[in-house]
Length: 360
Image 1 (cartoon, rainbow, N blue to C red):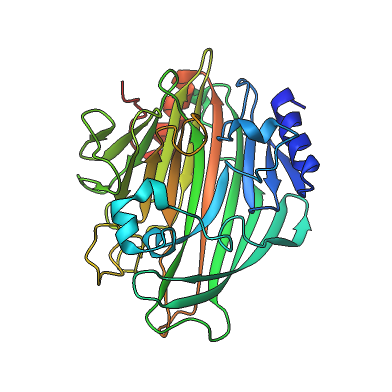
Image 2 (cartoon, rainbow, N blue to C red):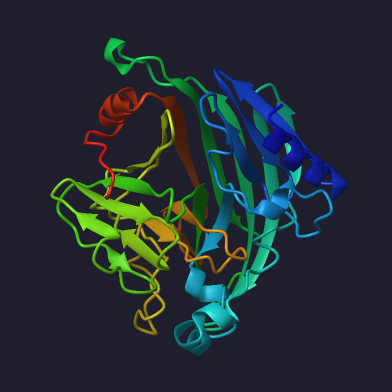
């Protein structure tokens, strides 16, 4: 085992958290039952986690739970991550809190076999905007899949691929009519001022992304006719969103290392016409739908004691209590690749349909 991987496993075991490793191709994934996370991804050529984890995850004396990697949150953020709509708008950093039934939740492994694990959780929240109660069951399935074919020009790349299928369904009769809820998948990735990365998001047309937090500034978001690029460097607290009709349902995080480069490609279903419910805090009080399908976040060292990171985020269409459908299920595919920079760029171009180019 890598030393960093060993230390994370030791910290999980010291806290009594069940975990498992899924190995395939050239790499492996570390999955935790607590919080239902894909916490770490390891591939040859890069020393360290290709996903983000805070430093305390390598400390066996920690009692801070599990943080980092890929997790499932429940949208809309503005509905239950602040005590009130006013506080969400006026003191977003100071008053934000994560409902415990969402994260870490009460996940338990229900199925497990070679290359696959399934977990489920019960979530109960109240929308602070209108007081509507929501009760739901969520399920996550992680499974290894075949990596995409490698062209002869791609060179010698290391890779691992996996799929996540998640569903949300109403529980009992505990949700008030008109309440909205949707699955919101978040993959945290490393990025610092000294070692940044660029998230590349192909688009169906030229689109100006929605801003959720601080202004984008002059260099963190670059808009082209066929893509939006988003800089992850820990230097500015920003979040952007792209609607379902403007995203191709693909994004990739590109990062150059000393001798190699890495690329995390995520493919998800963008369904124009279906309802999406994650909206900015300053949206009209009565608005509940019209949200984005793709989102990205750049942290400013606020969340984890000076450690910076970014996020690749996507949403499935939401449920609306009292209307069909009564269950939503969505699947995403993630390909993680490491290798020579020119091969990474060629393969990324094949997978995304746009050029892989960093924001400099």
